[in-house]
Image (cartoon, rainbow, N blue to C red; front, side, top):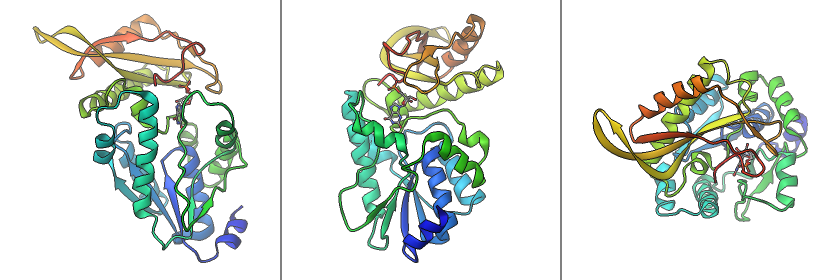
Length: 298
Ligand code: XMP
């Protein structure tokens, strides 16, 4: 693949959309092996990422792998565009368009190719009827050539390729995280306050599951900041804040999933920690399997 890419691209420049997920990361390192500094990666900080995630991505690609990476801080742009929007499909569409707008700013004439880490399942899934709009960039046709070097590979093959390129196993086998990020885990309008709650509660849930030795066996887990508020008592005063739900599922491929039966004592411990987060009034546990529910709430 490296030789083929070298032959194809020659001395031209490539811009890659780097999300920090497995696919785009493997694609970045593959292209880097082929064309070195003629590759520029753009990482869009949507403001919809998990705690410390943007810094970790930048650190890994810039410092560890020495790639050309530009970070675009588009968090205010995303938040503005999402203002007042409550419909899940509309949110996804807006996020998709905002990504495109952010990329168009950096995709200058200098680049002959625009690369992304599309893999085989992305291609087949978008050919079939969709339950939700999945997130892949479809930039307007302009004067660049689309490069998708991983589009004939399945996920397990992408991971093997990643291993051979020096990416750690830990990184390659991380839990899946949706393209639209925390936006699909916040119901109702997305606000700075809800995002902060989503980030902190997600982080606490992770730490607690690791501490209790449950993290590895759960396919996906996260918190959902619902649009429902309830009364509570904090520091002896009445308080009205958001209801947060814990979601944790077992699955092989995300097509079906059953809930993870976290022991009650652990759930209680997690709940108490989550209630310490500012703005959280109540914690519930979602026990809906897929089907009939979906894994994400939106
Ligand atoms: P659902 O909620 O449909 O999710 O049961 C199935 C799996 O897909 C992930 N997911 C997404 N991944 N872009 C992604 O890249 C998306 O828009 C998206 N929506 C859901 C979800 O996290 C789960 O693993």
